[in-house]
Length: 310
Image 1: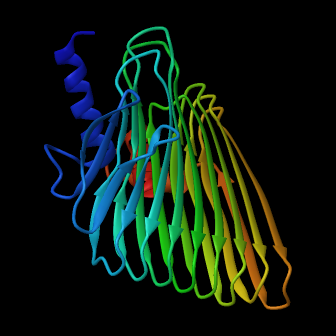
Image 2: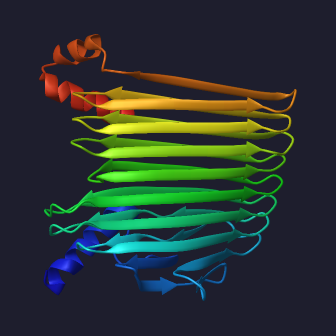
């Protein structure tokens, strides 16, 4: 692959996973093929390289107001096996949006892989919105693999919302999320996944609600097409007066397979925990209704899926 082609692939991936077009007007760290391709810190958000392993520390100052930081990771060619450790230290009463995401492109028979281990430490009153998009692309036969791992520790009164999306091109993914939730804290994790062909996706959520009046919502919405497989595991442990809700809503098409495995444990009298799961095909009456407007069956299916995954 020539340099010009590789640069164009990097631009496309960057736009798709992080909506970056040009140089971000905020703190950022862009990782490409296991190296740093660009970085900028600001007065309120410092980004520093780790000294003992591959990765960065992101330090958000206390009292930061509605700021942003971009941390995309790109793999633009075959044969790359990337492993990165990123730690986020969110100061007291800070409010920050973190735009992450990973794009993997393969152009040959060798596969490429990105494994990202992100840890978040939220001080009291901190507020984080974490947005993560994953995509795979390229004409190569090599597998595109993305395995994200997330760990969250939340101190009193903090809030974290994670919004993750994987819509196309990733052949294999294993997603792990662990949350340690303190008093008066709220953790919300929402994922959207679409698989097709022989792709596989596995999600594992585990949350310990340790603080009084803590809460969490774990939500998975997915579509499995072709011969793809998906597995959703969720575990909520209510160790104090708390509220926890886990839900899996999935559409299966063709020969797709989806399994949902919930586990909720109330270790306190005032722990209120709920799990819901719905897996099935697209309802026939939905397709019929859209076909009355002149859509073909395939067009009707596409409209339904687009609305479902929005």
